[in-house]
Length: 246
Image 1 (cartoon, rainbow, N blue to C red):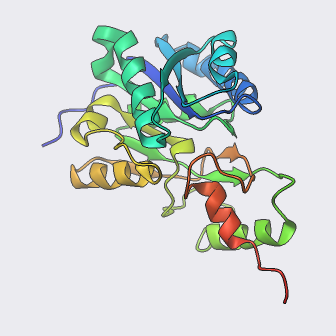
Image 2 (tube, rainbow, N blue to C red):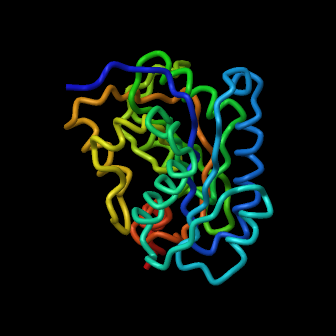
């Protein structure tokens, strides 16, 4: 049985990264704006942002520290292990406050809106254990127009017009929030090279977590078709690309 809900008293933002020096600064600037939203500041929650630099041989770790993030380094080349390491490091930094923390995860090639964290915390206060948000795809030189349109058609199939009340089927580590207690009951992110976010969502459902699927606060993720995680979103876009005419 789930324990009674209590409002979050702290916040962990977890970002896995593998050689993301080109995109990480913009991600962290967007997160900085989100952590300083007036409605979030009014709640006076301790916030720790952690970048898990996984098998990086570029300046990802140094850039993360330069932008004020905590860094945990590992050499797994495994997005599930990296996401879990970032969460664990953040909860460790919070110490006694970790039990009632809210965990928000995104990716190192993603821009969150200014209200992203505020919205998640408000949903936690409203009684949700987990928030599964949506994405929008940013233009990228490797993403052609036909592929982008094909993705858009598939992704938004069944979405109500002019409404954020969309009980969608998507799960993105780039836009996911979960209460620490629910996260631990579900055994956290598994060490998978892809689909660790789907695995967590499945485990959360099995434990009876209250899950909100919403299009209210989407994030903007890279449209690159050269993914950092094998079989990740970039691979999905790559597979949608029409084959050249023969």
